[in-house]
Length: 320
Image (cartoon, rainbow, N blue to C red):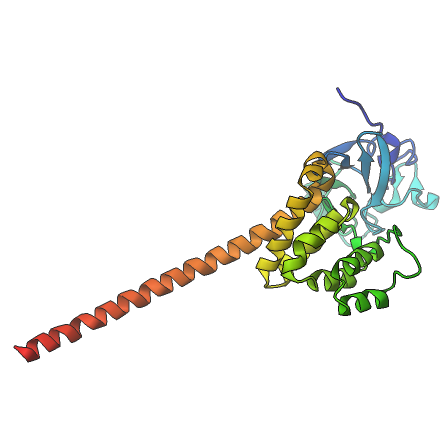
């Protein structure tokens, strides 16, 4: 056993309409039913019979973030405190059938079983309980999804909003980057764009590097920016048709920082997976296109051979 994480207080929350205890003292919502690790193994996400999904740091065993799956008050278990006037000694008023539209015969012929807590789900007075059936991280570690009562919920990390003010001075501006690109100082322009962290500037500086200067630019990129460059290449592989240029960049980066990337592989696992996913998709699309072209060429060759045979036979008959 490597360690345990006490998440009883983290997952607790929400009071059902039929509970006679407060949300803090309830026991039905204090356990996880689904757990998933990230690709690098540094974090774990857990969800269960609660409105919360928690992400923990494995090494320190601390709570990193807690997400609420829904704010829909029509679901049972969303509110932490209920209105006391709707609670009676016999239970919640919402669970009572106070309608006088059903006749005595219809009431007698209902299929409700004694002691059944679910009741007839076709009736409007039944409130589904908020819960998380399963959670799972994406291969890149930038997104995670949860199957909840309201359906599939997907949360994503917006990397474009992250601002990392490293190696930034008064001269590091978008205007200065564009001027460096015009003066053909591609490496410095790319490093300044990476330090600013703006996606449009990074792509513009990245695509402005000539193919012959790509190995030099790849060697000049610090390790702190290699992951960002790999993510940029993965996005460009999916969006742009110049695959050879992206592969040239990928090979230069991996070759220049091979030793460091091997020793720090878990840290860059999300970038590797994003790049692998983009390249695999391109490989699949190109393979299908090449196969279709091969079949078309084979058909054309066979068709031309079939039309040449009757013409040669007619010439032989005319000469005889």
